[in-house]
Amino acid sequence: MQQKKEVKKKKAFQLVKGMRDILPEEQRYWDFLRDLINKIAKTYGFSRLDTPLVEAADLFVRGIGQVTDIVEKEMYAFVDQGGDHLALRPEGTAGLARAYVEHGMHNLPQPVKLFYFGPMFRHDKPQTGRYRQHWQFGFEILGEADPIVDAQVILVAYKIYQSLNLPVNIQINSIGCPGCRPDYENELKDYFKKHKNRLSELSQHRLLKNPLRILDSKEKEDLPIIADAPQQIDFLCEDCRNHFMLLFEYLDDLGIPYALNPTIVRGLDYYGRTTFEIWTAEEEENSPREAGGEAGRLTDSAGRQSALGGGGRYDGLVELLGGNPTPAVGFAGGVERLIAQMKEKDIKVPEREKPEIFLAQLGSEARKKALVLFEELKEAGLAVSENLSKSGLKVQLENADKQKVKFTLILGQKEIVDGTIMIRDMENGIQEVVDFTKVVAEVKKRLEKSNVK
Ligand code: AMP
Image (tube, rainbow, N blue to C red; front, side, top):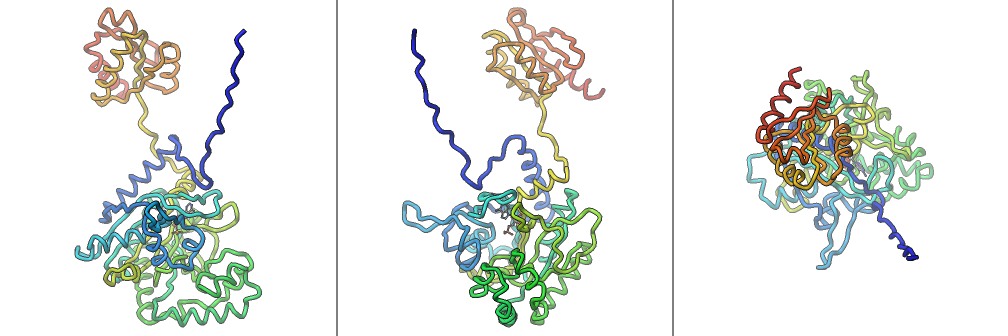
C-alpha cells in the first residue's frame, strides 16, 4: 500500500494589525461615495488632485508640527534604500499644499479649489472605526482669506452628509491667529498649571509642549478642568473676531446648524482661526447644540470620541512649505466612519449591476462557442454572467438560479449540431429553441418585454 505523504500546511498570512480588506460586498458603498464626492466636487467647482502616498517625512514634521500625536507617535516614517527620510502620508492637506507650491498654482486665478479621495496612514491604536490605513475625502480652497470660503467648505461638508440623510451638526471654534493666540496660550497655560496635579498624564506632558492640545483631551479627569478653562473667543483680536462673526452670518444665511464649541482645537499646528468638526446629530435635533455638548460625537470601543470629519483654516501652511503667503481653508472626512454610519442608519445604496442573463454550456464545442457568444452579448450592452469553467449543467443552472437572472441561455451538443440555442425563461421555466445567429436580438426582445411587464 502506498503511504500517504503528510504535507504540512504553511501558516497562512493574515492582515497586518490595523489594516482591513474592503471586500466585494462592501464595494458598492465605496463606489457610491466616490460618485457622490465627484458629483459634489463638480457642482461646487473643485478639481481633483492626487498626491503620492509617500512624501518627505519632513513635509509633515514641518507642516503638521513636531509636537502633535500624528508626528510624535503615529507617522509611518522610514528611510528608503537611497537613504531618503520618507513617510506614508498621515493626512491629505500637507501634500496638497506642497503640490500647490511645486506646480506654481499661485499663478492660476485664485482661489484654487481642490479635492482628493484616498488612503491615509497612522500608527494609531487599532479598534472599531480606527484603522492604521483609513480613507479620507477632502476639499480645500487655497488663495482666499475671506470667511465666505470657510462657509463654502463647511457647506460642501454639510451637503455630503445631508444628501445621505445623515443628520450632522457642525461644531465650530476659532483658535485665533499668531497675533492673538500667544496671549491666550499664556492665559491657558497659567490656568492649567494651577490644576496640574488633577490633569491626566498626557495633558501634563502637553502642558509643557502644546497647552492648546489639552482642550482636545478625551481623558475623563481632564473634562471638568477643560470645561472651566479660559476660551479663545474672549481673546480674539479684532480681525479674527470679525472673521468669526462674518462666518456665523454666512452659515446662518445658509441655514446650516452649528454649535460654538471652544474645545475644537484640532490636532495639527497648521490651523488658525476657523476650526470645525462634523458630528452626528440626532434626527429630530436640527437646532444648534449648547457649547461643548458631547452628544453626537461618535465614540469608539475605548470610549474615545471621534468625529465624522473636521477641518479649518490654515493660512500659514503654504508659506511654511516654501510658497508665497496663501490663506487657505479645508475639510477632510473619514470614509470608513461614514460607511459605518450609513450601515447603522440603514442608508441604502444602489446594488451593483445585477446580471439579467446567464450563459450555460455543455461539452467542449459548446464551451468554445459560449466564450465568443459571451463577448457578443456584452458588446450588445447586456448584463450577462457565466460559469464557463464548470462542465456540469446542473451546477450552472443552480448558479443562474442564485443570481436570479431572467433568462438562461443553454448551449449543448444538440444545439451545436443544429446551429441553435435554448432560451429558458427562469420565471415560468418555459424553454424555447432559437436560431443561434439570432440569439442576441431574441434575448433583447424578451428582456424588453419582461421589463415592460
Ligand atoms: P483628522 O484629520 O484626524 O480630523 O481626520 C479626518 C477624519 O478622518 C476623521 O474625522 C475621521 O472620520 C477619519 N479618521 C481619522 N483617523 C482615522 C483612523 N485612524 N481610522 C479611521 N478613520 C479615521
